[in-house]
Structures are given as C-alpha cells and as structure tokens.
Image 1 (spheres, rainbow, N blue to C red):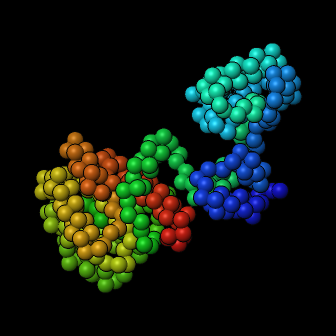
Image 2 (cartoon, rainbow, N blue to C red; image 1 turned 135 degrees about the vertical axis):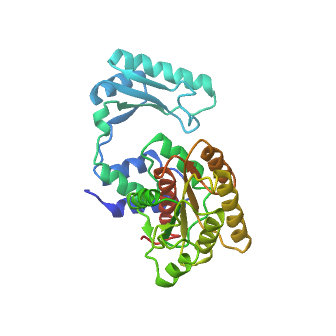
Length: 329
C-alpha cells in the first residue's frame, strides 16, 4: 500500500468524527504503513517468558513499556525500560515494570508489556512523506526547539487571517529584502501592490522611498510615517497580514515605535478590524524592551531577527489552511 492517502484520510476523519486529538497506536501504525514509513518491530508479551522470547525474535536491543489503559504516563509509573540486550534482561525487565505498574496503580488493568526494537535505523524514512502526513492532519512542523516554543507562543496570539495577501512595511531596504526572502521560505504570498494602493502609500513616504511590496518608508522618517502607513495597511481590506521591519533611529526610538504600533492596532481593533501583525526590530538593546512591549499587547515581535517573526506568521497560515479557514496561496 504505497503512499495510500485515501487510507490516511479515513483514519484521520475517524479521529475527527470522534472528537479525538490523538490517534491510537494501531491508527498511527496504519498511517505509517500507508506511507511505507519504517516503524520498529514490536509485540506485546503477556508473561515474563513471552517477553524474553519476543525480544529475541525482534532483535536486541529493545525497549519495553507497560501496556495498561489506565497508565498513560508510563515513565512516571516506572513502566519503561530501555536498552534491553538479552533474554534474561527482558525476562527480568518484564517482572520489574509490571511490579512497578501495580505499585503505581493497584487498580490498573495490566495487559502486558510491549517490546519494540530500539535501533535508530528502524525509524528512518523519507522526510517528504512526513511532511505530507503532517499537512493532511493539520500538524504544524517545527524544525527546531526554538521554532516549537515560538509557534506555541505566537499562534494563539495572532488573529486568523482572512486571506493570503501579506504586505511588508519597513524602515530599511535591507530589512525588507530579508523579510521578503523569509516570506518565500515560509510559503507566504507577498501581495502584488495595486496602483491605487501604491499611490495611497506614496502619500505618506518620501519621494525616495519605495511603495511597492515591501513598502520602504526609509530610515529618517518620524513616528507618524509608521503610524500612517500601518493604519492604511490595516484599513485596506485587500491586505490580510502585515509584517513590520523596524530599524532603530534617533527620530523614532524603539519604544516610541512600539507604543505607536500598539495604539494603531488597538484603534483598528475598536473598529472591528483585526489582522495578524508581526514585527522585526533591529538596533541597540532598546529594541528588546520594545519587542516585549509589542508582544504583551498582541503584536508578536522579535529583536535581532527577520526570520523568526515570518516563520511564526507562516505557522499561523499553515494552521489556518489546515483548518480550512484560508485557501492555499
């Protein structure tokens, strides 16, 4: 059953229909089999003798885990043993984890112990297949621990976008280029600027600025330029998300920028306009305080990075697309 997406969809639809947020072990195995993902050999032992025999058949080393519907956190119950390398260790290990489980919960139903291969190679597979499975099931993949933490923090803060048009407003051309590249890397669609909107932005920026996308207001502009361009970006219904690139200047200090952006977003929110707004800040240590202030007021902001804010916005879009709230770009 090579790359059988229909089988995967049946499994996922069943879990959704039952309002479950997790798959059973057989369901997870079924998805892996559908995509020909290598999974460790495993078997459930009912006795200590079974454990030794099955472990030998699977091939050492193995990991052993207690099987009990009532014991979900097996490690806390002392129901896990890793690095089992012989029949004798498997036999004694079975007795150990069953005893620990009964001590942990005397009323738990003990169904046995699962032995599984612990070879790293048993888990190898085509990375693209994992991406495909995650996409179908609405899972947002984090490539690093930092991404995982930032996604978990930022996604609930951001409003759900109503479309795919992203506009960058920046005080420095270099920042705009980096943010644009990050948008491409994260599957975000930079809006093609309509002539009327281009003209509207140009009313607020100097002649040597750029009103395409990114909108480059240049570095010497006062706080009102940020205020006017961001307000325009929030008011125009064709724009669905904003990314702000701030560079520290004497004319617009970090906290002045942060307070003004919070005021504009709050002003629009009071009018019923809510869009995802991200911010990337560069400068001296003052941008750290400004970034925290922005985040505390519903604008995820990151000092010294153009990649992280765009990655978080990209994760929000992946979530929205997976939930069927936003079409693909």
